Length: 454
Image 1 (cartoon, rainbow, N blue to C red):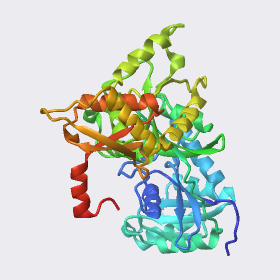
Image 2: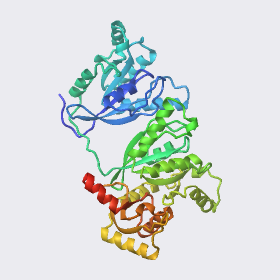
Image 3: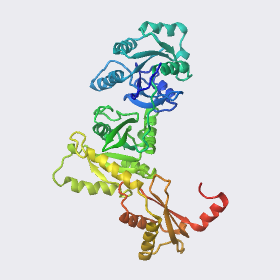
Image 4: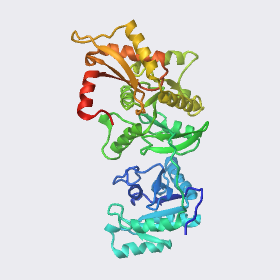
């Protein structure tokens, strides 16, 4: 029988490469959080997500890399994460391929799990492809409790859930609505995982001197001055012509999804190769998504510099990002720790700016002053009239509606002028601002037809 506790239990899925661990992980969650492909070793980093049983009990579900002999130091780092997951877990789901004979790695992972003394369940996966005698052969691994499963056919999931229901305590993970979510984005090998580790203060992501190490989006939550900050480390986004099919494609899609999940994005660019065209494209995606943005120049400790390098390099980089002049520029070094905590300070400041509310009275006083100083410029000999503005209080992106007549003929340069003046009055550094220009007559007609916004 389960009992109530404050400890959130951890359930780790472990096994050798390509036995279907990530497919099981996704099937439990009902999502595609882990990358799945017909290629051994797809999962490299340990991925942790909240999972919930039908009864409402919550737990942390961990997907790990495939266990195998470490051929080099890089592979050894991956294997160490599996040991850490087993040590941290309350329940271990040892996963094997039921359609193949027991391997040395199967024996190794079963021995590690049993030696830990933790509750251990054997999942004989791919049962839809296996014969009965193949499945039962895996009893020789010595794990008393075993279940035949198939992630693709959802065989055995009722038995797994029933078993977890008996073993897991009644715990509910409280969702923190005030969490600040920060995504680390950029090209491969610009130092995202190094900064992620420095911010998380633990070896959560794998760091190596090779491009494209991170494939999944890793997440970790940290506390900073009483606030919860969730970090999302992503795979590097390559130029479209260099994106391989399969895993590489999924990684890019996962990075784009991370932009949508995030409140603030850190765009990392290498100090030795700053501001390439792809960096500009990623910044554009972040701006279009309405997210906060900080341009981070990484590996500052490796730069060949003198006392004047920063002052000369900063304007050069900023010139490449003229379309996001509001994005702060931060030079960091994960090795020395320079400006690492400044990332958190900036994130908190940007979120406070994005959340600020401006009264309709102050907005319209400002609008009148701008129009009086410089009347609107129009197109096609039409003279737009801007009458009043309001803030959209339902939108997480700082958004403002400006109502008037002939607004669709407002010149683009005047819109840019208004945003510049707006930012001079109200502090929105680090965040895009949306100014919507709406013809009042068109708005009235729409309200009459559709009843307005609900």
